[in-house]
Image 1 (tube, rainbow, N blue to C red):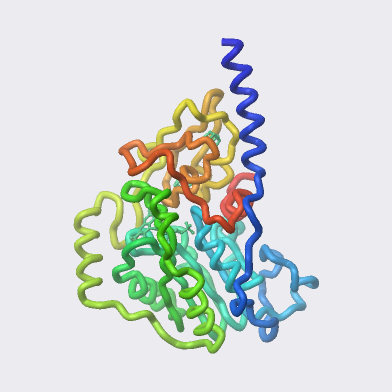
Image 2 (cartoon, rainbow, N blue to C red):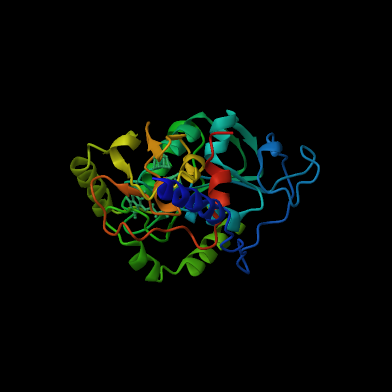
Length: 323
Ligand SMILES: Cc1cc2nc3c(=O)[nH]c(=O)nc-3n(C[C@H](O)[C@H](O)[C@H](O)COP(=O)(O)O)c2cc1C
Ligand code: SF4
Ligand code: SF4
């Protein structure tokens, strides 16, 4: 027993170190630098994450403000490639700040069953996004179906239609069907596709990515097959049903900080998931000890993913609801 406690304490210390490991800085693609600052000022500059060119809050003019939601860093990475002014949607929701103004406003989110995460949908319904140009970039890993059209409809229903919507293929972090080690080997042409999107945005191109009738049908079939989890209104999942925390847990608390729904608490022995879940998989992928597994099975429980340009601390900063 004493040995076990000693080992647990040692592992805890290792976990603390692992949690603070810097895996590499965010890089900016050449040709993809954000536009220079000009135009309308934001109402919510204190909420912004990147202050490099935002020294006197409230006075500066923001050209492009980009909101994002992320579980494993793809959308965070893309948001930061598009602008120096980014805001995490979980943090905006936590603060209850919904009025923003800039020349251009963008949203970057991962598609879940071809739809936005519940929190993104709620944000779009509540937010007043005052801008001359509103765009959305939807990241996905395998099959986008009618994702652009669904996003377009949500924009119209919220009273501020999008001017531009594009999808962007990246690593698929959906663990039930995909082995992350295999996913990371696939060249998804991200720099090329991102450069194309950036060029469109730089001329404020007005274009909603087209959806075929076949893709519409595929989405309808998907909804009829997966209706226990995915409905047209959003995702229905409970963290306690989806995730099992194994005895690999060293109670480091990282899952608590990366969850945008504050679904984790700490027991003496291990972390405990409970609550309405976004299914973002931030907890599973970011656990440094792979101690969280999918209760109903997954392709490879030993393979986990975080965008290589994103640090675990960035995900914590984006999603943490506690403290
Ligand atoms: C719950 C869930 C559902 C997903 N549904 C789809 C999907 O329908 N089609 C698809 O191509 N990718 C799907 N994905 C993959 C993600 O959209 C993709 O990996 C995204 O880039 C992750 O972004 P993030 O790293 O910012 O969290 C899904 C992922 C999750 C967790
Ligand atoms: S389950 Fe949570 S507390 Fe336990 S090791 Fe993983 S991240 Fe840390
Ligand atoms: S419990 Fe996990 S999957 Fe669910 S919202 Fe929290 S981090 Fe995301």
